[in-house]
Amino acid sequence: MKIYHVCEYCQQVYSTTEVEGPEGAIQLNGTCEDCALELGMNETFTNIGQHFYN
Ligand SMILES: [Zn+2]
Image (cartoon, rainbow, N blue to C red; front, side, top):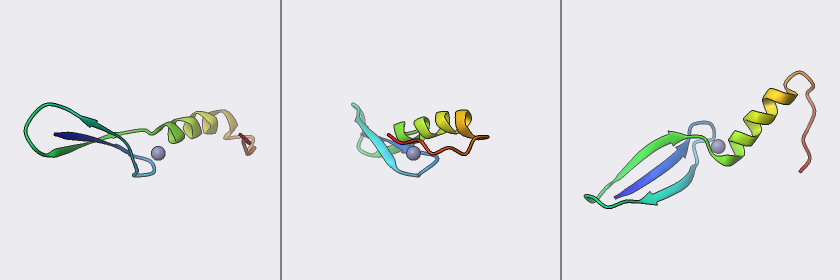
């Protein structure tokens, strides 16, 4: 079966994992790397309103 890791912020499947078991798929909510970064940055820059250039 497949596990779909879906980002609860942007609703994108950011990772899939194949595991032993019956046919099918399940969905797990999580946070993708992009959103984790953005969230981290938001915390830092919330009151500054600065844009982060990569
Ligand atoms: Zn995301």
